[in-house]
Amino acid sequence: MKAHILVQPYMRSKGEDVELPGGDPDRFDTLLQRTTEQMKFADENGFAGFCMTEHHFQVEGIETTTNPLLWNLHIAQNTKNLMVGQVGMALTAHHPMRLAEDLAMLDHMTDGRLFVGFVRGNTPRWLNNLSQYLDITTTQSDRSKADARNRRLMEESWQVIKKAWTNKTFNHYGEFWDIPPTDITWPFPPTKAWGGEDALGEGDILKKTGIVPRPRQREGRDFPPLYVPFSWSMETAKFWAKEGAKLVAFVSKEEFIDMTMDLYIEEAHKHGHTECTVGNTLVLGGHLTIGSTEAQAESHYRDFEELFNFAYNAPPYNVPMGRVWKGTVNQVIDQVGALKEKYGTEEFVCWHHVGYFEQEEELEMLDNFSQVIKAVS
Image 1: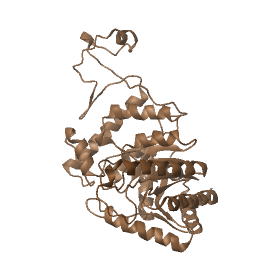
Image 2: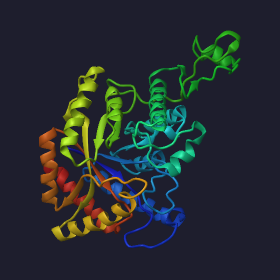
Image 3: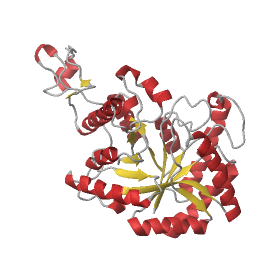
Image 4: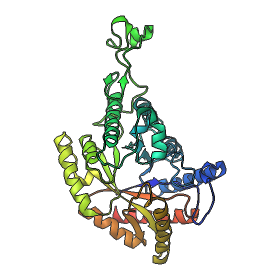
């Protein structure tokens, strides 16, 4: 059994009533130290990976996951074995060539411990800010014109990244990206000598380009493994099935997971990923509120439930909590064991809320779940 930790860092703790903690440098230093200590503990106690979502401008101190790539590098430098990744980077908020290069560099700097994940983005305050030059907004998978445009950008940006990772040089001309632009005159002697025989066209117009570096090569693939979070959009699930990605699901309704995985595996096989099964593709996640006693577990759950209903199951998100790793060690062993038996999956995720509880409590939660890992493995 592999257990990854999806860290949601908070710069405000339970019960605090303070304005704008997210911009406080002292609070960030504290968060950095606490997260580092916890991930070192996780690395030494059986956890397999570390990841974050991507959010910006969270000045209220809620879910302060600014720049997961820098977090990945920091955690990798302070651990020995943990995989590091993102669940995920918003493809609609980044230039795909820049993101392809950054991730490839990170792959090398982490000695190949990287996994990658991509999303369309669900937070207008930051995504609409960063994507305004492309006239992109967040959507709710409502099949509107804005939703369709957002999805087309996500899909095209991934195709650019994939081309950049799997080709020494390439070009791409689509709805959103021209790579390279068709008006670059590039009479650069090193390009003529070493840039590939088809890099330049008539009049020294640049015809192809590439990224530096490309990712590390792996057996059977040219780039890091894909872990893609899933909530409810079947279109998104089918798109990533074509790419052979692992599907990370925090949905608690098993009948919905069953329906999704039937479609997902069918689509994956249709596009040549015949090695994909439910067991090696589905990654099941839950919020970590485990306790050493039933009373402690119930207290952790109620405290987190209050936060979740205030900050997530509220406008503009209005999302249900989903699965929770709730109860004592033995109770969570039963929960994980039942899911492992039903789906055959070997990978799970703990959605861990660093900085919200006391440091000792959060370390205790990780220690308790490490006992689950040992019991179910």
